[in-house]
Every structure is written in structure tokens, then in C-alpha cells.
Amino acid sequence: MNITLHVWRQKNRNAEGAFVTYQARDISPDMSFLEMLDVVNEGLILKGEEPIAFDHDCREGICGQCGVVVNGSPHGPRKATTTCQLHMRSFKDGDELTLEPWRANAFPVIKDLIVDRGAFDRIIAVGGFITAPTGNAPDGNAILVPKLAADRSMDAAACIGCGACVAACPNGSAMLFVAAKITHLGYLPQGQPERDRRALAMVARMDEEGFGTCTNHGECEAACPKEIPIEFIARMNRDFLKAALFTPAERAAASDGG
Image (cartoon, rainbow, N blue to C red; front, top):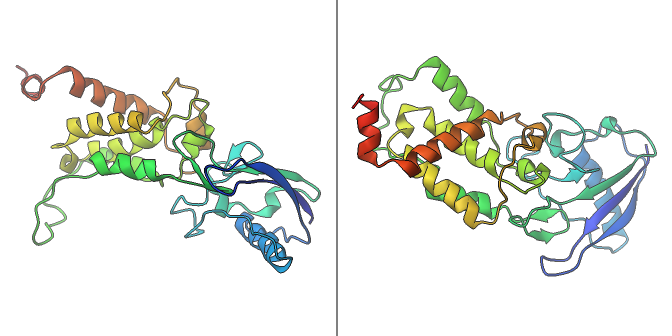
């Protein structure tokens, strides 16, 4: 199959970018999307041209590095599929594909299709952890976790931090990502000591990084390759409001029925 690619090329974050057209010829439908880009780059290198820069690592849908907007859809047309899991059989011979990086102020372009997602790392650094004593590993059954809480925590922990939610959101909001990171610890007893501080710190850092606000478009949930539910945003908002409106003593009194 032959595909026409319109690829965003940008030398660095300070340079002006533009779309450049390339032909991907004799592409096997069984190739992954990134393998197709590898073939195109091999041809460019043989011609002495600069290859297309794109991010990737595991190529197994685990690391979240491969994000590319394909024809306006983060990660491409298939639901619950990362770009590296996307195969060329999802397209037809003769198709034209427009490839762009994530478009968000908080994700500056490094080069071509690669963006700097360091903002996500900085959000995690201010609160995405728990207090744990050092020493030997505790017994696995030392702290009982209800099955429902464990299941919901795992649902939230499935977030791979790819940034598709930000790229899909008309406001460039990171609320789904932050909600997933706050929720997966907030459901567990081990995450309770920092629960309030975590919500306050991570939301504040999200705002500092320049992400937009959430207006409940739902595009984030639709674009998420791990299908993180938007209801986690509501749970995060409740945690944030409780932490912002009440002192620790007031919250403790309320939980004790005082």
C-alpha cells in the first residue's frame, strides 16, 4: 500500500514549523505505524535528508512515549490504542495522513513530532507518592485493601502519562492525567496520610505548568488509550475542595462524627 504523509517538521522549540509531504511506498498492512515511519526515515537517510523525529520506547503500549496526532486524533483512529499499537491495516491504500505533535502550551515542541512532557514529571514529583517506612518489605497482607478499592485504584493506575488527554482537550487540560494519579493512591489506605496535601499540591502544580481548565468536553476520556474514566476528575475535585476548605482538625472531627 502507498500512503501520503503530511508531517509537521520543526527544528526546535524556537523555530517556525511547517508541514512537509512525504510518500510512504510499498508499506505492508501488517506494519505498525512506527515501523512505517522507520521505513520512511530509512529512505530519507539514504537521500541525505534529515529523518523525521518522533518519540518512542517500549512499542508495546506501556510507556506512553509514542504519542502522535494522526488526522486530528491523538494516537490515531482506533479506540484504546496507542500510536505504537496502531497498524497500517487501519488505513487504506492511497490514504493521506496528517501527522502532528501534541498541541498544548504546556508541551513545547522539542523537534518535529517530539514534545517536552516534563510538566507531567513535575506534577508527579510534588505529590505522586506515599510515605513508607524504610527497612524490610512489609507482609503483603499487613494492610487489608477492600476489593472494590483495589480494583478502582488499578483502573486509575493504568494511566501511562502519554498526554493524549491534553492533546485532545480543546482547553489543553491535564485534569484526567492528574485525577488518575491522585485517585490511584487516594483509594488505598497507604495513600491516606498525604491525601489532602497531594490534591492541593498536584492541582496547584498543574496550574503553574500552564495547562488549561476542564470544562467537561469529555474528549480526554475518548482519546485515552487506557480508557481512564472521566469520573475520576469529579473525585479529584472533591478531594481538592475538602482539602482547601477544611483544616486537618476539622476533617478529622467530621470523620469521627464530631
